[in-house]
Image (cartoon, rainbow, N blue to C red):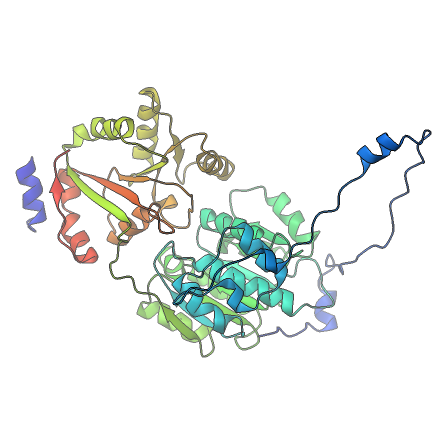
Length: 454
């Protein structure tokens, strides 16, 4: 069998324009936001003036947050968020998320983005792209407020290709905007349509994060209007191109103010000719920021490639899961049926695991991710639906039960570990069938892969 593997390796085989009054009349459900000054009825006086009782009822005022409380030393060669002159309410969210110094993509893109320039960003997965564009978006909404707001009219729109990535971006946005008063809404397919519709129609939405398909649905039903969008963010444009979403994204882009009347932040892992054509159409004199790692795969990840027979994979995997010190592990396979069967077998063998794949409904996928994040279960079996945009702290191991057909997907898979400067371990189980993928993977990684026996 190993001869076949060796044979395979060798190659034999700015501010948006205000809508006209007429345009407003076309939005019968849109209503101005309003603040009420009415006070709730005062509580009746207690029958007995018991000082001890009254003291117990008193609520201590929360201490006012001050920037001086967020101390980050200046270090040569590093950029602090303090250096960006951001609003205090945003800085408080940054502190609570544990951010201190900017990653390279943040340090290089934020100064121009905060000035309203269009940005074209390219960086490896897990480098802080989401925090970069969210910081720019929130800063703009806080520093350039509009007096008149209507329901169903977001000021910032973020479009991403997958439900998981949209949910992750929405969660990150809520964390950063926690103390700003800004309203964040996420809309994706596979979730309760009427519940999402109510969030759009009944609230003044500041930041809308959406998948293309579901956003088109709400645009068609006139439940969302994009003519007040000040900032348009397109994340993982290459993935949207691969998934056939570009016609939908074109329609979405045309519904927003023209380039020059809005700020566009465009992020993509790769800049192909097709992506370059979209950049020319959708951005105006963008600042290009490219963060090239020294290697395609981060040095923080210890990569192992183990030669195993196809019928030995499961036993080898179980041995690692039982004997290794595993905080959290993600096991990737290429097909839904493989992940489903693998998850079932792991549970039957006393290894508690959960499944994340496209055939699992969205509500269950969200609950699965939360259980995995919160540590109720530390093994997740997944298709490439979890390869991009799933940010879970503390993933110590990534297993490739199958090598992916696309070498780029391999890098995205193992990028779930070794994040934010931590160390991670990637283990690929290479059988006869997988061996045919090795030459292309070696070329993509730019290195000769060392095959070991388990």
